[in-house]
Length: 285
Image 1 (spheres, rainbow, N blue to C red):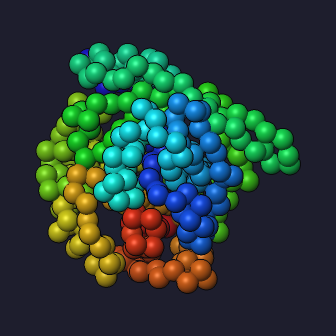
Image 2: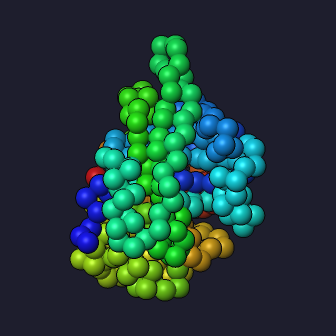
Image 3: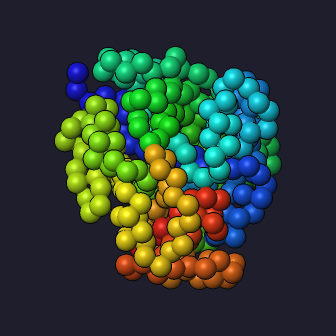
């Protein structure tokens, strides 16, 4: 079977945090505009803040009530907070699930959930989703799922897409691993062998939108020389890169908040310790 036609790139990334309100304050200081706090359906047992970009986004996710559905998140948090999961875009989650199973990958049955949304100017709406989860062995070094949006207008709200740091899109997701080529090759089963290629220090997978870059700790240290990377968790997502409209504005927003911005190869970086365990990189573009 060919590459699934109903997977169209990366929809969003998930940063798991222990304290949602503290994390939201941190990301506001980093120059991001955050949505109001959202509480997911009861069986999910989670809440979040979203940071909306042009066509994609990322979220800060915390557990507010232990449930069967959030056991995997709680297991991860015992090892520390930080970037953890990648959600893929789809135009039809049910069809995407069928395509994934057609590849011989046992995706979970699709799950529906929702959260209330405070709308600009007053009033509330609902953000509704349908998701299906990949089995761990199919996506080494990440947790990956497919996220279908049933109510895009209540998620991509223009007022929430304007950021002091001028971020406008995800540019890359970086994964730390001691076997980058082998990890990336596994994703060729999902995205096609032609989507996998070598990069300095590792390998990359073209998802149809934002690439996923698999790098060794040594390659990360070389690429981000001067950035205190701390304890790099292996076999886990490690960093988010963003396209920004104005790199100078991004740096100014960080410095105004007292956050150390490190210049690396013409880009601006924030250490994981200053961003809830996630390396952040701002790129002009």
